[in-house]
Image (cartoon, rainbow, N blue to C red; front, top):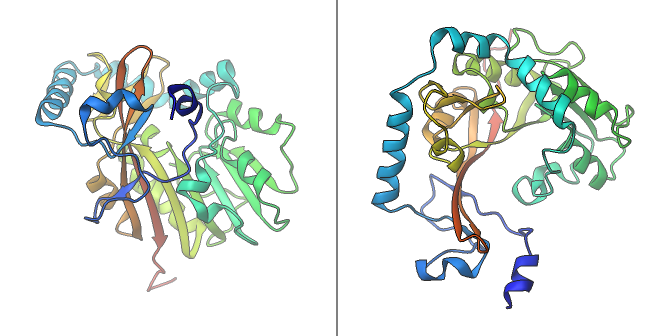
Length: 311
């Protein structure tokens, strides 16, 4: 295959995630067996790090932690978290994030789902909701979408594809003490959380999980994807941007946490059966500039455990 034809095939038609509890490799992935071949393709799956890379990552995080952001400055970012995301969407609208066409590969549960109610939390510009509505021909599918940035909700509602008969976008904070008024307890089939939990304070994770649990039907499913520990984005943070362990503030004021698979088990395992707790390690290659970029994402599918002692 020529470099030009290979370069044009950017979209994956397979999943590269690997469940941490399974020893067998994922089939259909592109594995880098010989490092001398790294420039042959644009991306490689399940790339294992050597000791030197692991050591560099640990040293980089240690250096970041030696200069934490001041407590006074931290308070500003925690109190005004919604404002910073609101500003982000005011400036970027729907230009920053691409529609998530990979959803069908990683989360086939979302496609041709029948008469279901789906809730996308942290909808942003609707990059999950609109692709789902475009491919699902089922008239009984209904998608709720929320964000705690008002401008994000407005971007969704102003999209020509927004149809109030098939969807409902609104403002809501996942860490609130109450679930949304327009969603009945135990009424949802699927909750989608894509790069959402990383944006909230670790002290609020338990409330977020409780809210998701309340809204899902018994046996309902959470589809989760977020940043993994030592992802390229984490290692690139400069000193003075760390709030606490593995929790940072970007230059635009938005926050981001980088998880481990063990933390995912701890956060979700009390109320959900973890059907998938996977890691997606990819080496992205810029062959023109001779750059190698290591990305690490975590992916999960969590099934609601029915309350044995309902009120």
